[in-house]
Amino acid sequence: MQDIPANIEKAAGTASDRLRTARENIGSVVYGQDKVIELAIAALLSGGHALLVGVPGLAKTLLVETLGTVMGLEDKRVQFTPDLMPGDILGSEVLEETAKGKREFRFIPGPIFTQLLMADEINRASPRTQSALLQAMQERFVTIAGVRHDLPKPFHVLATQNPIEQEGTYPLPEAQLDRFLLRIDVDFPTLATERDILVRTTGADQASAKKAITPKQLIDMQALVRKLPVGENVLEAILTLVRNARPAQSDIESIREQVSWGPGPRAGQALMLATRARALIDGRLSPSIDDVLELAGPVLSHRMALNFAARADGQTVNSVIEILKDRIR
Image (cartoon, rainbow, N blue to C red; front, side, top):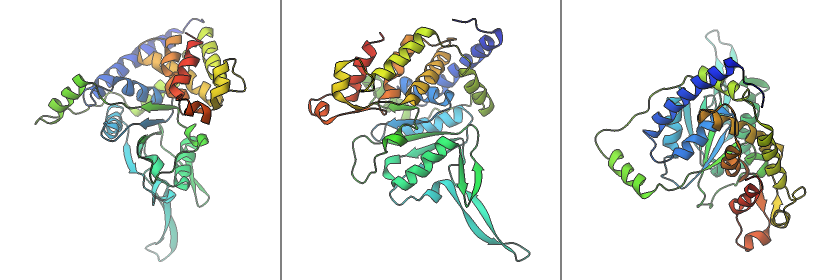
């Protein structure tokens, strides 16, 4: 691996200290979700968006609000419903009459014009509204009446989905799911954590988050992540993992038999960025194979699907990903 310049090493040390403080501040409000917090921060450091999947009541909204406070980001929340229209998110133009009696259009920005947007239950909105949001996520600007409006920097979306209740929902198409850097599964807390939650959140004193990072510092850290070197062994592990997940290219027989479609090149890009981000969070200057193994699920689980025979046989995407991980362990 190439030598790391002194300025990058110094910047990485400063960033790791700030990130450690940020994680502690978030953890003081959102209890028992250390892995979820780490993945959410990794998504932000990578400059991407994340899809939080979990049943109601697991502090997904609290996590986004706390992230906004700790990272110094302006945050907004939109509750997605079947009657939500694209203009309700992006904004619209209204016809107004000036003091001189002249009529002209004025653009009123929607809630998407923020630095951290929580799209709550994104699969409850119509495909048209989903597409409007996801296009903005990809392009980082919106076009209203032929006029381009750039979104703030940094700009991130943390969307949520309920994995149980599917009635009245519009599942995100595969091409739109691919826009999310990571899928983060939010599980129930352990017994000890749930006991802690009951004691700490029902008393008179409530913990509050404190700002630890500024938006400018976050943008600088996003640039730093892209400068961290990636070893040849990590690069090969990412390529092996992603290419073996595609039935047409895989040399694993069970993958060819069970997987309907696999991840595109964006999955490899996501892994390259997210492994660097995880290394920086952990205070390291370059990612390792362990980072690839840890992030394989969040990167691949929403970018591949099993065929009917595999599902009927009781296989899951996560079990298939474990087979893929065995190839690089």
